[in-house]
Image 1 (cartoon, rainbow, N blue to C red):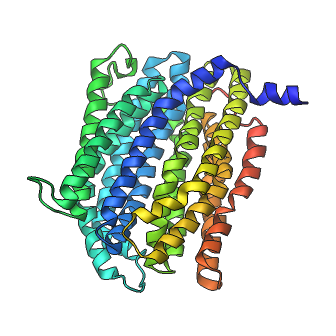
Image 2 (image 1 turned 180 degrees about the horizontal axis):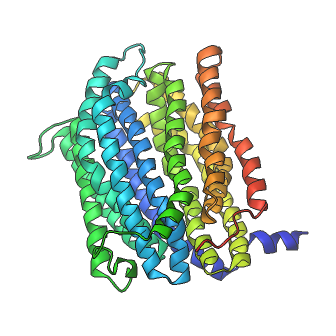
Length: 461
Protein backbone atom coordinates (compact mmCIF):
# COMPACT_ATOMS: atom_id res chain seq x y z
CA UNK A 1 0.00 0.00 0.00
CA UNK A 2 2.67 2.50 1.05
CA UNK A 3 4.89 1.47 -1.84
CA UNK A 4 2.04 2.04 -4.30
CA UNK A 5 1.27 5.48 -2.86
CA UNK A 6 4.95 6.39 -2.93
CA UNK A 7 5.23 5.38 -6.57
CA UNK A 8 2.10 7.34 -7.48
CA UNK A 9 2.75 10.57 -5.59
CA UNK A 10 6.50 10.84 -5.07
CA UNK A 11 8.90 11.32 -7.96
CA UNK A 12 12.62 10.67 -8.37
CA UNK A 13 15.38 13.28 -8.20
CA UNK A 14 15.27 13.91 -11.96
CA UNK A 15 11.55 14.68 -11.79
CA UNK A 16 11.89 17.18 -8.97
CA UNK A 17 14.98 18.68 -10.58
CA UNK A 18 12.99 19.47 -13.73
CA UNK A 19 9.93 20.69 -11.81
CA UNK A 20 11.91 22.88 -9.42
CA UNK A 21 14.15 24.20 -12.21
CA UNK A 22 11.06 25.40 -14.05
CA UNK A 23 9.21 26.68 -10.98
CA UNK A 24 12.05 28.38 -9.07
CA UNK A 25 12.45 31.44 -11.34
CA UNK A 26 8.67 31.88 -11.36
CA UNK A 27 8.55 31.60 -7.57
CA UNK A 28 11.42 34.07 -7.16
CA UNK A 29 9.80 36.53 -9.55
CA UNK A 30 6.46 36.23 -7.78
CA UNK A 31 8.10 36.46 -4.36
CA UNK A 32 9.91 39.66 -5.24
CA UNK A 33 6.78 41.13 -6.84
CA UNK A 34 4.65 40.36 -3.79
CA UNK A 35 7.34 41.54 -1.37
CA UNK A 36 7.55 44.88 -3.14
CA UNK A 37 3.74 45.00 -3.19
CA UNK A 38 3.94 44.43 0.56
CA UNK A 39 6.43 47.31 0.94
CA UNK A 40 4.25 49.47 -1.29
CA UNK A 41 1.26 48.62 0.89
CA UNK A 42 3.20 49.59 4.02
CA UNK A 43 4.38 52.88 2.53
CA UNK A 44 0.87 53.79 1.40
CA UNK A 45 -0.31 52.72 4.84
CA UNK A 46 1.75 55.48 6.41
CA UNK A 47 -0.56 57.96 4.66
CA UNK A 48 -3.58 56.83 6.67
CA UNK A 49 -6.56 54.49 6.52
CA UNK A 50 -8.23 56.32 3.63
CA UNK A 51 -5.10 55.90 1.49
CA UNK A 52 -4.97 52.15 2.19
CA UNK A 53 -8.67 51.76 1.39
CA UNK A 54 -8.37 53.84 -1.79
CA UNK A 55 -5.42 51.89 -3.18
CA UNK A 56 -6.89 48.55 -2.07
CA UNK A 57 -10.18 49.32 -3.83
CA UNK A 58 -8.54 50.36 -7.10
CA UNK A 59 -6.26 47.33 -6.94
CA UNK A 60 -9.36 45.16 -6.50
CA UNK A 61 -10.76 46.60 -9.73
CA UNK A 62 -7.36 46.28 -11.39
CA UNK A 63 -7.32 42.65 -10.23
CA UNK A 64 -10.42 41.96 -12.36
CA UNK A 65 -8.75 43.61 -15.36
CA UNK A 66 -5.47 41.71 -14.80
CA UNK A 67 -7.32 38.40 -14.68
CA UNK A 68 -9.14 39.31 -17.89
CA UNK A 69 -5.79 39.89 -19.60
CA UNK A 70 -4.42 36.71 -18.04
CA UNK A 71 -7.45 34.81 -19.33
CA UNK A 72 -6.93 36.15 -22.85
CA UNK A 73 -3.28 35.07 -22.77
CA UNK A 74 -4.12 31.73 -21.15
CA UNK A 75 -6.59 30.92 -23.93
CA UNK A 76 -3.65 30.87 -26.34
CA UNK A 77 -1.42 29.08 -23.82
CA UNK A 78 -3.62 25.97 -23.86
CA UNK A 79 -2.52 25.41 -27.44
CA UNK A 80 0.84 27.17 -27.10
CA UNK A 81 2.32 24.64 -24.66
CA UNK A 82 1.08 21.73 -26.77
CA UNK A 83 2.32 23.26 -30.06
CA UNK A 84 5.74 23.74 -28.49
CA UNK A 85 5.74 20.19 -27.11
CA UNK A 86 4.90 18.97 -30.61
CA UNK A 87 7.66 21.11 -32.19
CA UNK A 88 5.23 23.13 -34.32
CA UNK A 89 6.75 26.63 -34.11
CA UNK A 90 4.41 28.12 -36.70
CA UNK A 91 1.40 26.99 -34.71
CA UNK A 92 3.08 28.46 -31.64
CA UNK A 93 3.45 31.76 -33.54
CA UNK A 94 -0.27 31.88 -34.28
CA UNK A 95 -1.07 31.42 -30.59
CA UNK A 96 1.22 34.40 -29.89
CA UNK A 97 -0.69 36.56 -32.36
CA UNK A 98 -3.95 35.50 -30.78
CA UNK A 99 -2.66 36.49 -27.35
CA UNK A 100 -1.39 39.86 -28.56
CA UNK A 101 -4.68 40.78 -30.23
CA UNK A 102 -6.96 39.63 -27.43
CA UNK A 103 -4.93 41.15 -24.57
CA UNK A 104 -4.91 44.52 -26.37
CA UNK A 105 -8.65 44.29 -27.04
CA UNK A 106 -9.32 43.53 -23.36
CA UNK A 107 -7.11 46.48 -22.39
CA UNK A 108 -8.98 48.95 -24.59
CA UNK A 109 -12.31 47.77 -23.17
CA UNK A 110 -10.92 47.97 -19.64
CA UNK A 111 -9.70 51.55 -20.07
CA UNK A 112 -13.08 52.63 -21.48
CA UNK A 113 -14.92 50.98 -18.59
CA UNK A 114 -12.70 52.54 -15.91
CA UNK A 115 -13.02 55.95 -17.55
CA UNK A 116 -16.80 55.73 -17.70
CA UNK A 117 -17.64 54.11 -14.35
CA UNK A 118 -14.52 54.43 -12.19
CA UNK A 119 -16.20 56.55 -9.51
CA UNK A 120 -19.22 54.26 -9.18
CA UNK A 121 -17.07 51.13 -9.00
CA UNK A 122 -14.79 52.52 -6.28
CA UNK A 123 -17.79 53.74 -4.25
CA UNK A 124 -19.16 50.17 -4.06
CA UNK A 125 -16.39 49.26 -1.60
CA UNK A 126 -16.41 52.37 0.60
CA UNK A 127 -18.69 52.26 3.65
CA UNK A 128 -18.80 54.53 6.68
CA UNK A 129 -16.56 53.54 9.59
CA UNK A 130 -15.68 55.32 12.78
CA UNK A 131 -12.80 57.73 12.14
CA UNK A 132 -12.71 57.12 8.36
CA UNK A 133 -13.85 59.31 5.45
CA UNK A 134 -15.28 57.52 2.38
CA UNK A 135 -15.26 60.83 0.48
CA UNK A 136 -11.51 61.27 0.96
CA UNK A 137 -10.90 57.62 0.04
CA UNK A 138 -12.93 58.07 -3.17
CA UNK A 139 -10.97 61.18 -4.13
CA UNK A 140 -7.64 59.43 -3.56
CA UNK A 141 -8.86 56.34 -5.42
CA UNK A 142 -9.82 58.32 -8.52
CA UNK A 143 -6.41 60.02 -8.62
CA UNK A 144 -4.67 56.65 -8.28
CA UNK A 145 -6.85 55.03 -10.97
CA UNK A 146 -6.32 57.82 -13.53
CA UNK A 147 -2.56 57.24 -13.42
CA UNK A 148 -2.69 53.42 -13.29
CA UNK A 149 -4.60 53.39 -16.61
CA UNK A 150 -1.43 54.59 -18.39
CA UNK A 151 0.34 51.33 -17.51
CA UNK A 152 -2.33 48.89 -18.70
CA UNK A 153 -1.10 48.56 -22.31
CA UNK A 154 2.52 47.57 -21.49
CA UNK A 155 1.13 45.11 -18.92
CA UNK A 156 -1.05 43.46 -21.57
CA UNK A 157 1.71 43.23 -24.21
CA UNK A 158 4.11 41.84 -21.62
CA UNK A 159 1.63 39.06 -20.78
CA UNK A 160 1.48 38.00 -24.45
CA UNK A 161 5.28 37.75 -24.69
CA UNK A 162 6.02 36.36 -21.23
CA UNK A 163 3.50 33.52 -21.42
CA UNK A 164 4.91 32.38 -24.77
CA UNK A 165 8.45 32.54 -23.40
CA UNK A 166 7.43 30.43 -20.37
CA UNK A 167 5.83 27.83 -22.65
CA UNK A 168 9.27 27.18 -24.12
CA UNK A 169 10.56 26.43 -20.59
CA UNK A 170 12.47 29.73 -20.33
CA UNK A 171 11.23 31.17 -17.06
CA UNK A 172 14.41 33.02 -16.08
CA UNK A 173 13.97 36.00 -18.42
CA UNK A 174 10.50 36.99 -17.18
CA UNK A 175 11.90 36.56 -13.65
CA UNK A 176 14.79 38.95 -14.31
CA UNK A 177 12.48 41.48 -15.96
CA UNK A 178 10.14 41.24 -13.01
CA UNK A 179 13.01 41.69 -10.54
CA UNK A 180 14.22 44.83 -12.28
CA UNK A 181 10.69 46.18 -12.46
CA UNK A 182 9.85 45.60 -8.81
CA UNK A 183 13.19 47.02 -7.66
CA UNK A 184 12.43 50.14 -9.72
CA UNK A 185 8.93 50.22 -8.28
CA UNK A 186 10.18 49.98 -4.70
CA UNK A 187 12.75 52.76 -5.10
CA UNK A 188 10.36 55.08 -6.92
CA UNK A 189 7.62 54.33 -4.39
CA UNK A 190 9.77 55.65 -1.55
CA UNK A 191 10.98 58.64 -3.54
CA UNK A 192 7.58 59.68 -4.93
CA UNK A 193 5.30 58.85 -2.00
CA UNK A 194 7.34 60.66 0.65
CA UNK A 195 9.43 63.04 -1.48
CA UNK A 196 13.09 62.06 -1.31
CA UNK A 197 15.89 64.29 -2.66
CA UNK A 198 14.81 66.02 -5.87
CA UNK A 199 11.55 64.03 -6.09
CA UNK A 200 8.26 65.70 -5.12
CA UNK A 201 6.04 64.32 -2.34
CA UNK A 202 3.06 62.93 -4.25
CA UNK A 203 1.51 60.45 -1.83
CA UNK A 204 -0.95 58.03 -3.44
CA UNK A 205 -0.30 59.50 -6.90
CA UNK A 206 3.41 58.81 -6.46
CA UNK A 207 2.67 55.12 -5.81
CA UNK A 208 0.69 54.96 -9.05
CA UNK A 209 3.44 56.67 -11.09
CA UNK A 210 6.03 54.23 -9.72
CA UNK A 211 3.85 51.27 -10.74
CA UNK A 212 3.36 52.59 -14.28
CA UNK A 213 7.08 53.22 -14.85
CA UNK A 214 7.91 49.73 -13.56
CA UNK A 215 5.43 48.14 -15.99
CA UNK A 216 7.00 49.88 -18.98
CA UNK A 217 10.47 48.76 -17.90
CA UNK A 218 9.37 45.14 -17.42
CA UNK A 219 7.68 45.00 -20.82
CA UNK A 220 10.69 46.58 -22.54
CA UNK A 221 13.11 44.03 -21.08
CA UNK A 222 10.98 41.03 -22.08
CA UNK A 223 10.21 42.29 -25.60
CA UNK A 224 13.80 43.33 -26.41
CA UNK A 225 15.21 40.03 -25.14
CA UNK A 226 12.67 37.98 -27.10
CA UNK A 227 13.51 39.71 -30.40
CA UNK A 228 17.28 39.57 -29.86
CA UNK A 229 17.22 35.81 -29.14
CA UNK A 230 15.36 34.50 -32.17
CA UNK A 231 16.97 31.05 -31.81
CA UNK A 232 15.22 30.56 -28.49
CA UNK A 233 11.96 32.19 -29.55
CA UNK A 234 11.23 30.54 -32.88
CA UNK A 235 7.56 31.44 -32.62
CA UNK A 236 8.54 35.06 -33.41
CA UNK A 237 9.71 34.10 -36.91
CA UNK A 238 7.26 35.89 -39.19
CA UNK A 239 5.07 37.00 -36.29
CA UNK A 240 4.93 40.57 -37.62
CA UNK A 241 5.19 39.82 -41.33
CA UNK A 242 1.45 39.36 -41.40
CA UNK A 243 -1.51 39.81 -39.11
CA UNK A 244 -3.74 36.85 -39.88
CA UNK A 245 -4.46 33.65 -38.01
CA UNK A 246 -5.71 30.61 -39.98
CA UNK A 247 -9.44 30.30 -39.46
CA UNK A 248 -9.15 26.72 -38.20
CA UNK A 249 -6.58 27.61 -35.53
CA UNK A 250 -8.41 30.80 -34.57
CA UNK A 251 -11.69 28.93 -34.16
CA UNK A 252 -10.00 26.17 -32.15
CA UNK A 253 -8.41 28.64 -29.74
CA UNK A 254 -11.57 30.72 -29.50
CA UNK A 255 -13.83 27.74 -28.85
CA UNK A 256 -11.50 26.30 -26.22
CA UNK A 257 -10.35 29.67 -24.91
CA UNK A 258 -13.62 31.61 -24.68
CA UNK A 259 -14.78 29.78 -21.53
CA UNK A 260 -11.32 30.33 -20.04
CA UNK A 261 -11.30 34.05 -20.83
CA UNK A 262 -14.83 34.42 -19.50
CA UNK A 263 -13.92 32.33 -16.48
CA UNK A 264 -11.03 34.58 -15.45
CA UNK A 265 -13.18 37.72 -15.68
CA UNK A 266 -16.16 36.21 -13.87
CA UNK A 267 -13.97 34.60 -11.19
CA UNK A 268 -12.16 37.88 -10.49
CA UNK A 269 -15.49 39.73 -10.49
CA UNK A 270 -16.88 37.09 -8.12
CA UNK A 271 -13.96 37.54 -5.73
CA UNK A 272 -14.57 41.30 -5.89
CA UNK A 273 -18.26 40.71 -5.13
CA UNK A 274 -17.24 38.68 -2.08
CA UNK A 275 -14.94 41.49 -0.95
CA UNK A 276 -17.73 44.01 -1.50
CA UNK A 277 -19.97 41.97 0.78
CA UNK A 278 -17.28 42.03 3.47
CA UNK A 279 -16.84 45.79 2.99
CA UNK A 280 -20.44 46.60 4.02
CA UNK A 281 -19.24 45.92 7.58
CA UNK A 282 -17.17 49.12 7.33
CA UNK A 283 -13.92 50.55 5.96
CA UNK A 284 -12.06 49.01 8.92
CA UNK A 285 -12.86 45.59 7.47
CA UNK A 286 -11.70 46.64 3.99
CA UNK A 287 -8.43 47.98 5.41
CA UNK A 288 -7.84 44.84 7.48
CA UNK A 289 -8.58 42.63 4.44
CA UNK A 290 -6.09 44.65 2.37
CA UNK A 291 -3.40 43.99 4.95
CA UNK A 292 -4.34 40.30 5.25
CA UNK A 293 -4.42 39.74 1.48
CA UNK A 294 -1.03 41.43 1.03
CA UNK A 295 0.51 39.22 3.72
CA UNK A 296 -1.24 36.14 2.32
CA UNK A 297 0.20 36.81 -1.13
CA UNK A 298 3.71 36.55 0.34
CA UNK A 299 2.99 33.00 1.54
CA UNK A 300 0.85 31.90 -1.44
CA UNK A 301 3.62 32.27 -3.99
CA UNK A 302 4.86 28.68 -3.76
CA UNK A 303 1.57 26.91 -4.47
CA UNK A 304 0.49 29.55 -7.02
CA UNK A 305 3.57 29.04 -9.18
CA UNK A 306 3.85 25.27 -8.63
CA UNK A 307 0.25 25.03 -9.84
CA UNK A 308 1.00 27.18 -12.87
CA UNK A 309 3.91 24.89 -13.78
CA UNK A 310 1.47 21.99 -14.04
CA UNK A 311 -0.13 23.52 -17.13
CA UNK A 312 3.31 23.89 -18.77
CA UNK A 313 4.77 20.44 -18.00
CA UNK A 314 1.53 18.48 -18.42
CA UNK A 315 0.70 20.50 -21.55
CA UNK A 316 4.05 19.60 -23.11
CA UNK A 317 3.53 15.89 -22.34
CA UNK A 318 0.03 16.00 -23.81
CA UNK A 319 1.25 17.83 -26.92
CA UNK A 320 3.85 15.12 -27.45
CA UNK A 321 1.17 12.45 -27.08
CA UNK A 322 2.69 11.05 -23.85
CA UNK A 323 -0.57 10.68 -21.94
CA UNK A 324 0.56 8.28 -19.22
CA UNK A 325 3.62 10.42 -18.51
CA UNK A 326 1.32 13.45 -18.22
CA UNK A 327 -0.90 11.67 -15.71
CA UNK A 328 2.04 10.45 -13.65
CA UNK A 329 3.68 13.89 -13.56
CA UNK A 330 0.39 15.53 -12.62
CA UNK A 331 -0.14 13.27 -9.58
CA UNK A 332 3.35 13.95 -8.30
CA UNK A 333 3.18 17.69 -8.89
CA UNK A 334 -0.15 18.03 -7.08
CA UNK A 335 1.18 16.10 -4.07
CA UNK A 336 4.36 18.20 -3.98
CA UNK A 337 2.43 21.47 -4.25
CA UNK A 338 0.05 20.62 -1.38
CA UNK A 339 2.99 19.45 0.77
CA UNK A 340 4.92 22.70 0.21
CA UNK A 341 1.79 24.76 0.77
CA UNK A 342 1.10 23.07 4.10
CA UNK A 343 4.55 24.05 5.33
CA UNK A 344 4.00 27.65 4.22
CA UNK A 345 0.57 27.67 5.91
CA UNK A 346 2.07 26.60 9.23
CA UNK A 347 4.66 29.38 9.00
CA UNK A 348 2.00 31.93 8.07
CA UNK A 349 -0.24 30.87 10.96
CA UNK A 350 2.64 31.12 13.42
CA UNK A 351 4.18 34.42 12.30
CA UNK A 352 1.58 36.16 10.10
CA UNK A 353 0.24 38.13 13.04
CA UNK A 354 3.47 40.10 13.30
CA UNK A 355 2.95 41.89 9.97
CA UNK A 356 -0.09 44.07 10.81
CA UNK A 357 1.97 45.83 13.51
CA UNK A 358 4.09 47.41 10.79
CA UNK A 359 1.10 49.39 9.50
CA UNK A 360 0.07 52.83 10.72
CA UNK A 361 -3.50 51.79 11.59
CA UNK A 362 -5.61 51.49 14.73
CA UNK A 363 -5.20 48.54 17.15
CA UNK A 364 -8.68 47.33 16.14
CA UNK A 365 -7.67 47.05 12.48
CA UNK A 366 -4.42 45.27 13.42
CA UNK A 367 -6.32 42.73 15.51
CA UNK A 368 -8.85 42.14 12.73
CA UNK A 369 -6.11 41.71 10.11
CA UNK A 370 -4.33 39.19 12.36
CA UNK A 371 -7.47 37.08 12.60
CA UNK A 372 -8.01 37.22 8.82
CA UNK A 373 -4.41 36.05 8.29
CA UNK A 374 -4.90 33.09 10.66
CA UNK A 375 -8.10 32.02 8.86
CA UNK A 376 -6.41 32.30 5.45
CA UNK A 377 -3.53 30.11 6.70
CA UNK A 378 -5.94 27.39 7.86
CA UNK A 379 -7.55 27.09 4.44
CA UNK A 380 -4.38 27.54 2.36
CA UNK A 381 -3.60 23.81 1.71
CA UNK A 382 -7.17 23.34 0.45
CA UNK A 383 -6.69 26.31 -1.89
CA UNK A 384 -3.52 24.67 -3.18
CA UNK A 385 -5.33 21.47 -4.19
CA UNK A 386 -8.11 23.45 -5.92
CA UNK A 387 -5.49 25.51 -7.76
CA UNK A 388 -3.66 22.40 -8.99
CA UNK A 389 -6.93 20.77 -10.07
CA UNK A 390 -7.82 23.87 -12.08
CA UNK A 391 -4.51 23.89 -13.99
CA UNK A 392 -4.68 20.15 -14.59
CA UNK A 393 -8.08 20.45 -16.23
CA UNK A 394 -6.94 23.49 -18.20
CA UNK A 395 -3.84 21.77 -19.56
CA UNK A 396 -6.04 19.27 -21.41
CA UNK A 397 -8.23 21.98 -22.89
CA UNK A 398 -11.24 21.31 -20.64
CA UNK A 399 -12.08 24.97 -20.41
CA UNK A 400 -15.83 24.50 -20.04
CA UNK A 401 -15.19 22.25 -17.06
CA UNK A 402 -12.80 24.79 -15.53
CA UNK A 403 -15.44 27.47 -16.12
CA UNK A 404 -17.95 25.49 -14.05
CA UNK A 405 -15.31 24.56 -11.48
CA UNK A 406 -14.00 28.09 -10.98
CA UNK A 407 -16.21 31.07 -11.81
CA UNK A 408 -19.61 29.36 -11.70
CA UNK A 409 -18.70 27.95 -8.27
CA UNK A 410 -17.64 31.42 -7.09
CA UNK A 411 -20.90 33.03 -8.20
CA UNK A 412 -23.22 30.18 -7.20
CA UNK A 413 -21.65 29.28 -3.84
CA UNK A 414 -19.10 31.78 -2.50
CA UNK A 415 -20.62 35.13 -3.49
CA UNK A 416 -24.20 34.33 -2.34
CA UNK A 417 -22.89 32.85 0.93
CA UNK A 418 -20.79 35.97 1.60
CA UNK A 419 -23.73 38.22 0.75
CA UNK A 420 -26.20 36.41 3.00
CA UNK A 421 -23.83 36.03 5.95
CA UNK A 422 -22.61 39.64 5.76
CA UNK A 423 -26.02 41.27 5.22
CA UNK A 424 -28.52 39.08 7.07
CA UNK A 425 -26.75 37.44 10.02
CA UNK A 426 -25.22 38.66 13.25
CA UNK A 427 -22.06 36.62 12.72
CA UNK A 428 -18.82 38.49 13.29
CA UNK A 429 -16.93 39.32 10.10
CA UNK A 430 -14.12 36.87 10.97
CA UNK A 431 -16.61 33.99 11.14
CA UNK A 432 -18.19 35.17 7.88
CA UNK A 433 -14.72 35.10 6.29
CA UNK A 434 -14.02 31.65 7.78
CA UNK A 435 -17.18 30.05 6.37
CA UNK A 436 -16.80 31.64 2.94
CA UNK A 437 -13.17 30.51 2.65
CA UNK A 438 -14.23 27.09 3.87
CA UNK A 439 -16.16 26.49 0.65
CA UNK A 440 -12.76 25.35 -0.72
CA UNK A 441 -13.62 21.94 0.74
CA UNK A 442 -16.43 21.60 -1.78
CA UNK A 443 -14.06 22.58 -4.61
CA UNK A 444 -11.54 20.02 -3.36
CA UNK A 445 -14.10 17.24 -3.63
CA UNK A 446 -15.14 18.37 -7.12
CA UNK A 447 -11.51 18.77 -8.22
CA UNK A 448 -10.51 15.35 -6.94
CA UNK A 449 -13.17 13.50 -8.93
CA UNK A 450 -12.63 15.60 -12.07
CA UNK A 451 -8.88 14.98 -12.09
CA UNK A 452 -9.31 11.30 -11.21
CA UNK A 453 -11.75 10.83 -14.12
CA UNK A 454 -8.93 11.59 -16.62
CA UNK A 455 -11.35 13.75 -18.63
CA UNK A 456 -8.48 16.20 -19.17
CA UNK A 457 -6.07 13.57 -20.49
CA UNK A 458 -6.08 14.39 -24.22
CA UNK A 459 -3.90 15.72 -27.00
CA UNK A 460 -5.60 18.69 -28.70
CA UNK A 461 -3.03 19.70 -31.36
